[in-house]
Image 1 (tube, rainbow, N blue to C red):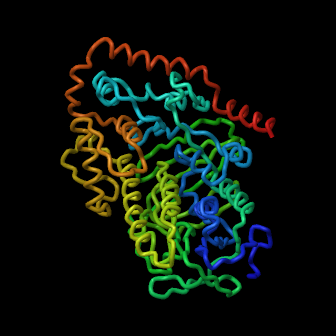
Image 2: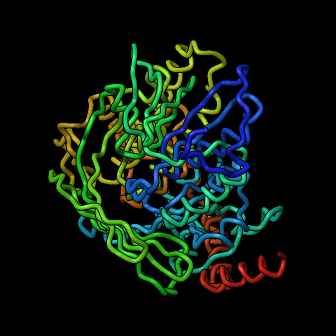
Image 3: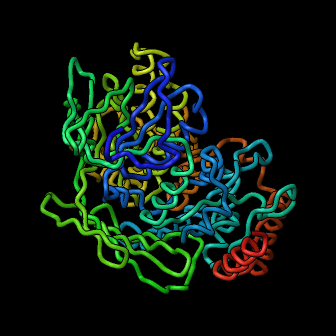
Length: 504
């Protein structure tokens, strides 16, 4: 037994030559999620070990503390319930992101989560609103709840309730969240080895073994790099990374801040932005500045300012040889949206689908990298669309996005331009296969960024009548009536926790 191995029941894993031997490396949210997901889905098919460095990777701050609205089901797939999350962490509910004074103080909207919009009168709902010059925000119960600091769980089996069309996510403290996931992991029969990796031995683009702190070595069929933005295992394999920009990111925690809001608030622009995250009894302020400097001191403690410098970009391949990079080890996007968490979820799900059946991993590697590149590119499109103001500035002659145009590859630029041009031309929503952000996300974004099509679907000519106007008024009034009756976010969370305490 390695002397660094955790002497607990969860480390008693009998080797089985018929099982795929997997080693995960990293003290990170991605490492713990990957281990939990693999153990829950494939425990009888793999032999799983986690090499756990002493300290959590600082780059976990790059999730921005925000999840996607499908986090509830993602947690369930890892054996995590919502009551556990709220009782054992300081996480909070969120209906979305409130962009306030965004991009030169021009834009102010709530990027709320929503079920698919209904098709009204044979026309997409957003086109009906555009035809009647209506503000989409008034028709999003999640957005209105954010503006009034209200929250309640969407009711089940009550389709007539406006609240039933809302979706919610979670805000989390990245250190608190990681501790919670690690504690869940320690309840599993997963071998934990407390050590860092001193070196990786590589032959023919494959890792043969990892050298640990005590100079012992560990080998495996498949290695999973969850070391964060440093991507230590991928670096040992000589993997190439495309870097678009660099940011300095700081985080300040305000203890005993009870002004809970069901969102995070983002302001600023691509060069310098700030996000305020509201948690149980505290808030956190993220500040990001684009810079070329790399000399930033790393500090990490519960109540102090955290400073890191990170390269925004992605590995050309996330699976090289017998090593797979997950989440921040593969791609870093700025967390002024929840794109980083969405990519984490996609990476874990893709890994589960493509766990190899033998040491011949060529087909799995090829498919994984194809889908990885597509997911990252599509997530980048959403972030880029959040900063593209060509339509608003009326610079029709501009052919490149404002963000590091020289670093934006032509394929990505073409995909973005196609989306924006088709919407601005006739309100058409261009969608690509399996995008991380759905059509509703994009529609809300376009309305928030004040993108107005030059013309609409010709069917809109037939819906300018009193019945349509009455229907819109009824829908808007129903939301306006229900939101004031909802409890404040702080009060709802307090009562929710008290309820869970009584139940336990």
